[in-house]
Amino acid sequence: MTVFILVSGMFTGPHVWHDTTALLTAAGADVRTVPLGGLDGVRAAPGSVVDLESHIADVVAVIDSVQRGAHAEIVLVGHDYGIHPVVGAADRRAASIARIVHLDSGVPQDGVPALAAVADRQLREEVIRRSAGGGASAAELPPPAREEWQLWGSVAGLPDAALDRLTALAGPQPMATLLQPLSLTGALAHVPHTGVLCTAGGAGIALVQSRVDLGEPSLQAWAGPRRTFFELPTGHWPMLSSPDELARTLLRAAADEGHRLTPANAAGPPAHLRPFLLDVPVTPVERVAHVDLHLPSAPGPRPAVLIVHGGPVPAGAAPREWPGMTGYARYAAAHGVMGVTVEHRLHDVADYERAAADVAAAVELVRSDPRVDADRIALWFFSGSGLLSAEWLASPPAWLRCLAANYPVMAPLPGWGRLDSRFRPADAVAHAGGLPLVLVRAGLESDGIAVTVEAFLDSARRHGVDVEVVDVPDGHHSFEAVDPTDASRKAVHRAMRAVLGHLTV
Image (cartoon, rainbow, N blue to C red; front, side, top):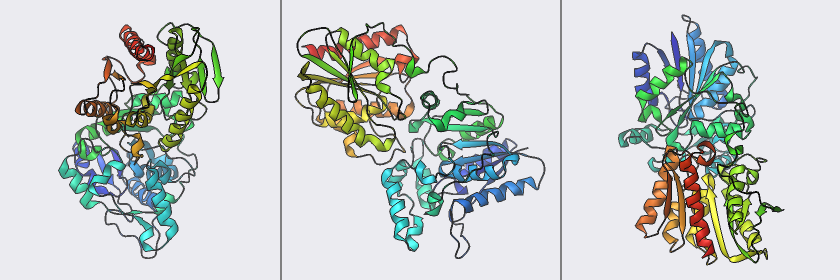
């Protein structure tokens, strides 16, 4: 008998699992939902503090109640915040657990509080401020209003009635559950894990694989044989938007099915280190601060195109040296244009302000170089750096002759929190005027990112702004590395010709 123990996320409780529980039970599984103290109407003992350890104890109690019965394969499922008490409880009862399922949640780490997994910096600061203020009101974080749920994750696929009910039944989150560091002993090393990614939020298996390839320490264990993955094409609350598919996925996870990641460097170089898909000549390179200048052989001040890598990427990844970035820069240099690869400090979604400052500083550095024609500059953004294009779209300087973007993120992804309005290209494009725009669109883009691209293009159309779209119908995100096909090569040639054409007229 498989026993699923389901633990819900912030502000919610067992009620969110109603449909999924019914479906799993009909399939022959035993299902338990865990009422966490202080949530969903569960009252804590008078005078007690509800913290992460008390929630861990709540989950342990359910595990122990199962163990008193017949032999069972226990699968612990943690959604959102719920993964923290799940992992804590599993660490204390590792011998009893058959699998842990991370349902659109992070990877809890020893010594790190759950608050660290909250993407929205304002929300993190609010929790800290309230907890420092003391008093009864500071002990709890109020639940979101109906329109605020998107700050915690994508609401894609969530029917209006379900969102209304989620809001009506939501309760305050005890502050100490977010602030108390998780304590782990390492007992979970041999327990299988499954990650279920809800792709409407922008995350997918390919993204996780890329983070493994980039060497992110917290994810290296997820490329092992005891780790599997599934994707669900829905938002952050699949138990409400896609309960049937979620139930099937949980059953498959319990059966050890799912996609397994490739360990870093196990199958040749990772995608970001694969050779550029075009044979471009090597050109002289000069490093100045946080930019690399790929020098053209043509005399006189030359136009320049700044290649801005995506992100977030781990510190030390050296993206300005990646073959994809240098390939575009060399292509430009071979055609008489200074190709510039820019390194910026976008290591987390909270880093957009300093990344924007890095890009602005790179622009000024390049424009001040006597070998550069300061009045003929192009900016080319990739992937997550697409949000950095907003400021240049909102008020294009006269010297900016073209702005390009490859498979870009053009609006903050759900769950990234309240990024400053400076980083909303889908809004800023309304002010782009006659600035030439080139957008390279991957036909097999992840759902979450594709939505932002379409919102950007819709806004451009509404405001009469022309965008030259270069489509790669069978291309994925980072198609230059993962899909080095003739169609991809043609798309790169077409995009390069467009950008360089605006610089050399």
